Length: 396
Image (tube, rainbow, N blue to C red; front, top):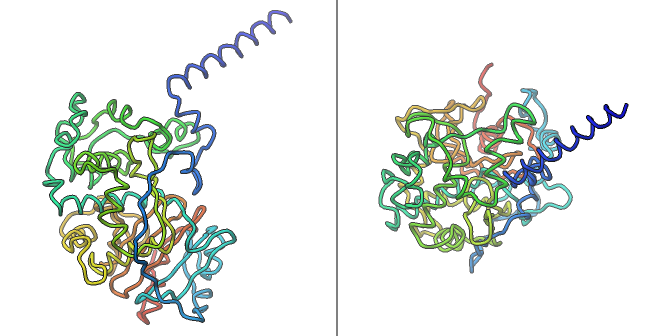
């Protein structure tokens, strides 16, 4: 019996030492263990930089009585079941849902504690925001060309041969070729994933210095956080401003925003997590949609080059590298662009159901903030319904 107790104590002690060594080796794993899958509030554990609101606010038109007919409109959920939109919103734990057409708020729903002014993390929707900023930096010549090598802007990466041939366009296309392990495949894989590492680490530079190249740059598309994070670092080096400062001066203050937005850093004065930590209110997120709906203009003034808006939201003759959902959304310049049926609508999308949908055909903007989302893609059906246009889901 004494021998058994001794062996048990040795095993417990060994496990304790192994865990201690693991957390000393990879301290970010303590945050992974504590917070696990991040929610809309997790960004608060990180340092933030602010993009300050506009001096003059744009207000969407709000009618005294909004439309309720959308409540009963049938849409498909993630199980391909046809349900009323009201039930879709409930099932997806959708916290804010705003439908805007022709600058008028036609329909909005909120759960308790949420309003159009609640600051919320949009997770991977941040990727589309850094795409906008890169377009601006090209326009003001802070960045010379998308064909430039990353190491031209970040010479600190030169010691790692993985970065030698990677261009800015490779990063926008998510074809850097850099190694990245997603969080799919079970609890253990998620715990040790690169997805968790880059979200929770307090030193992204150190992690990037060690990353390996597994594919020739420009050849293989893999959805990952590394590429947009690198674009944020490039922007900082190219402009001499933080991502928050540049975004504020060149975009956020110029489009009539009513509230401050924030960007999460890995540490104080560190790198901005431009892959997943941009926080915004629903009503101001819609103003990004409005900016793009108006081909980059606000109040008649060109804010974002029209050519960049078109380049970002139209794939053109490129062969899509991805096809998500029935709408076959392809990832292009960090936006999601449907390829099924009518071409023209597009979306910024984030984990747990964060969405900004824009449809130029019907002049419609939809913003959705959620705790997990109900799946599928009801936005095109909503936009067509409001415009009195026919719509049918593709047959399975």
